[in-house]
Image 1 (cartoon, rainbow, N blue to C red):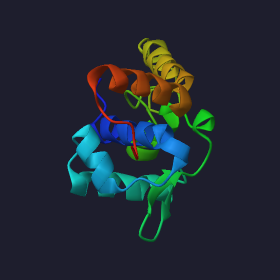
Image 2 (cartoon, one colour):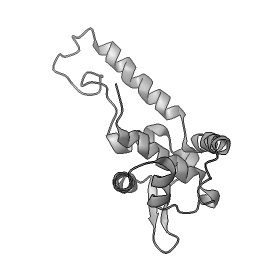
Image 3 (cartoon, rainbow, N blue to C red):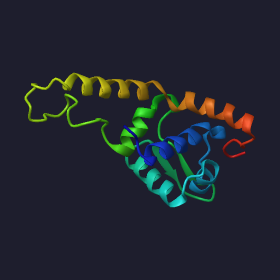
Image 4 (cartoon, helix red, strand yellow):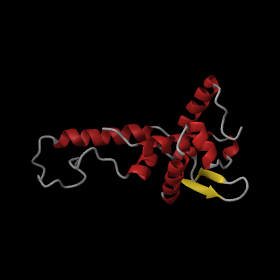
Length: 147
């Protein structure tokens, strides 16, 4: 199973927002440059994340995007599901009827995959990921957001 670039880039962008000094708005151009994300693609992702209530757009000369909630309250699962939709590795995950009426030996496998994926992504919040990113950036010479 592989998540799309939407999840990867969206999570990187929100980690940058969570790491921003004084939680100041960040421009899409700054985020795109820092994380090597195509600008047009990032703009689409942030529009989706805004509609899903994870970021807020700030207008004006020093505008950009900020997190809509505290970074501790946004998990990697929230970001991935906002961009990809509900996570299900297959149609057979116990959430949706597949037509076999529960008479499928593979059902517990897919239910466990779905549950585990959701649990793991739910363990990581943007605040802790931002702290990790700031440490990595400091050791590699990447400037912190809005520096």
